[in-house]
Image 1 (cartoon, protein in one colour):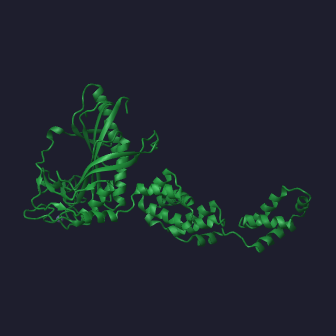
Image 2 (tube, helix red, strand yellow; image 1 turned 60 degrees about the vertical axis):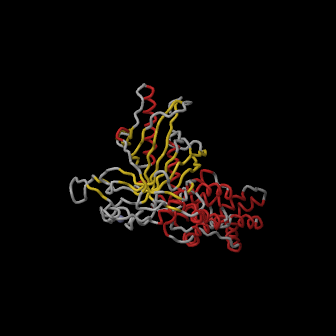
Image 3 (cartoon, rainbow, N blue to C red; image 1 turned 45 degrees about the horizontal axis):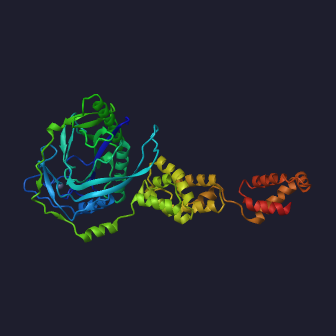
Length: 489
Ligand SMILES: [Zn+2]
């Protein structure tokens, strides 16, 4: 960012809650079905149809709110947000306005600026204020790509109409595009972690908007802000914010000022462009939804939701650093995925070696998982099997390179460590009688070296060790070889 300027960024995230059915009717929320196949009189907005609140929306909403540090309000009210658009058959959206489901949260995230190559340079905590998360229904979708069997064709698909959303709104607390980037990733991860949302941006069940303005450092009042939409990935969002910051600083410096407007990210041209100016901003004429009672949640319900909350990823990361001696970077990678974190903890405990467990998981296992497009939850090597391999390594029965080779084979075949080790012939010979027999052969086969060694050439000891290891094809236990050689020579 140009010196003397700072960015002021607030974020809005729409997260689809992970219910099987819609917020006010029994239609399925599933993705990718035939257009308008998951609809009924309620979500089609037919006259006389009445909404009934889906209880699971309240449960997932509560878990999302708790994961984000929000307070759940005992009473919240659904309101009608009135506007006309083809994908909104009722002419209004049922949302929440002045009495939202949850509000006033403090959330601490870890964030870092990135260097030229995109690497994080300095992770540090940032605490931001989340103003609210309210519950609402999604609208349908105007589709312009054409039906598969026809040419260009526009139509309205109401499968998405009525799917439940949590809208999460922050204060303008971010000062850089990377802070906003780390925030969205944090929200995605905790929502997935507590099971409140799939939070998959590709499927559109997590969508974000950024409000961006810039001001001179030291200036208190805000300048006009621009709302950025159409941000299809966290990376595009970060680029769009970065572009917008530079564009606005240049406009202010040129004395042109910045118009309050909505802009889209144009990913082909790597720039933002105007979608609409604020002049046609809507007056939504909110009023309480007469067909729904206020939503009242009891303190007992809130207490139960709190009790059901799993340990959150940041707390788990800190515990892994504390308990298992992992670095911040390694622990962060491990808690990047809940299944991976659980896998790690099982392996660390069963093997009794948390550091080696982390090394094998973060290098060998993750590489194999990535190459095969699998997640940790679907790993063909169960945590107990990896732990058994690490124990075999720690017992000195195989070496580190062999262990890596064994793990790759375990991954490909699904077999246990012991099976692969014996199939590969990696098992060490630790039987003293067997090793003694090999040593005798080596001594008998090299009389000149034996005489020289006995005559005082101590350096030849290494030669004998090498011969024994060679004769055993590398399998003899080196410790026993050393002991027996010394006594026999
Ligand atoms: Zn329906």
